Image: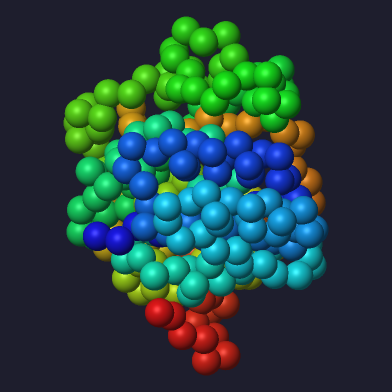
Length: 267
């Protein structure tokens, strides 16, 4: 089982550096980390270049020109670059619990995708992490730095198996997702019809579900800590909802504007 960790980023190298440090601190290391960069400036590339010498795994930077919010496109490009047979997607503002990779690896099973857990840190805690005045750590249920989703900070992975699989589509968020590469390719990857913030992860998870992949939430495991940031621009949200609603209405298993187009091939 080869694990590719795909981290989405855009012009936030300070947060990305904190994320990279939590990856280096993993109990189980990924086989490779791919930074899926939606058009960041040169500082992000310089940061990744510095960390290549520090990482015991392959670290790659996949970049696309900044033409607006196109995270489905850059995730597909990163998937094409990946060499792993199991992919974990996360974001450049999610700090990883030391057992994050271990939890996904231990729970992996055929035809099953897992959705990880998020804990939201306060603006004050986020500033402390970015400035280096707060050491990276695993925040507990009682930590005052937690602003929301406090229960998600509790790690008891043996309880995860007791939670039933998800059987409702449309509201499942899959931005923090562990999925077998063959299952992702079977539904044609992320739908690049989505532009702007919102719904592209729910649409992907819905297509996986309709294709026969079991969707499960990795409760009390697969923990991340979300660094605070202002709310994203949601001007395209209604358009994105229409794309999602068509997928749900027609129970679509694949998409037209996905990973396979114009002769692209995967490794």
